[in-house]
Amino acid sequence: MSAPSPLSARARGLGPSPTMATDARAKELQAQGRDLINLTAGEPDFPTVPAASDAAVRAIAEGFTHYTAATGVAELRRAIAGKLQAENGLRYAPEQIAVTPGAKFALYAAMQVLCDPGDEVLIASPYWVSYPEQAALAGATPVFVPTREEDGFVLRAAAIAPLLTPATKLLVLNSPCNPTGAVIPPEELQAIGDLVLRHERMYVLSDEIYEKMVYEGRRHASIAALDPEVQRRTVTINGLSKAYAMTGWRVGYTAAAPEVARAIAHFLSQTTSNVTSIAQRAALGALTGPAADVDHMVAEFARRRVRVLERLSAMPHVRCAAPGGAFYVFPRVAPVFGWRSAAGAAIPDADALALRLMEEAGLAVVPGTGFGAPAHIRISYAAGMEALDAACDRLDGFLRGLRAA
Ligand SMILES: Cc1ncc(COP(=O)(O)O)c(C=O)c1O
Image (cartoon, rainbow, N blue to C red; front, side, top):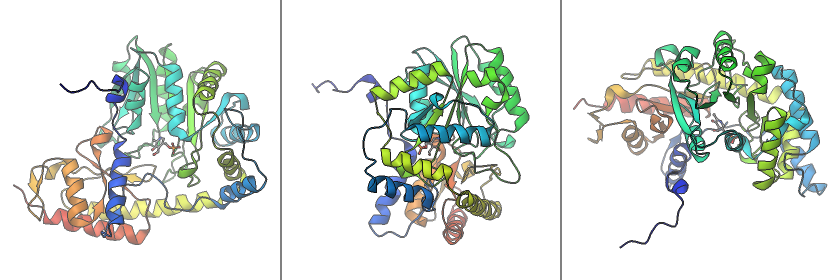
């Protein structure tokens, strides 16, 4: 008889983040010397903005290396409140802000303080991989709201409405969206806000981590700015990872109504304590530093987006909706399922396709399966133009080599 598992049911139900797993496998192959273009990354390929790195070096030199308040130092929370007011039209007092180890933990903390077992958490599908897992870790049930590829994967109030029940507690918004790049247009955001107002029990988690990466004249809007009651029931989530190329520093934050903010503060004080003091100074440097670095990065992403979409449109078997934001494209590859690769391997699904693409063509992408979209693959364009062109050559060659079974 095998020994009983030492693990909790919670741990037994939890797998690794599939995006991090593909990235790890690609890095492993690269370390073995394989010629591989890795487009799995969920992070900018730019260096951290100098204003952040310089502030961190100064923090170390000054010995700013001890515990801080669990929710972060006052100067940083003031700077975040200032940013939210200036850029998002949101008024939060610094006490309503909590600095967290990345936006990922901000989301986790918010779900932990808002959800009870039996609560339902509405998540637009395709979704970022951690939302359903984090809802489940809070004992809640993820409920997926369908979006349509023909509609650019935009989350619509009309798709949310039929799924509302007395158990609905949270609606997770992610605009711009990872993996689809979809941006919720202002009139749709208003309609979603109206739904929130009509459904008294419902709160919103608004994950705005890709807010600065929007293209073709689109503007990011925060749902909490619609109305004071919507703001009261929204936890606005953001972080420094994407906008300032600071993924490794682990700085994110929540902005919430006082009661929720207090609960998040208690939660942090019992779990992580403060975000690394040096990283907090780096974040302060980034937020108060020049905007030119961010603007340059976004302009570069915009150029790459156009190029990759152009290249994809000339490839056989794939179809790709134009994403409004973030730094991913999300083409549909299902027409080749059931076919064989040039080397003769079967391609029953997106996982197999991604694997064959990695092994046979030296190109790493993420299968859509982990995002709830098994007909798609996610391609990150957080890579130089030359690498992207080479990657498109490889994908094109691979697709042209496929044979219908
Ligand atoms: C949609 C979305 N939210 C949150 C995060 C977490 O970002 P971080 O924890 O680095 O701040 C990511 C990272 O990939 C993301 O794509």
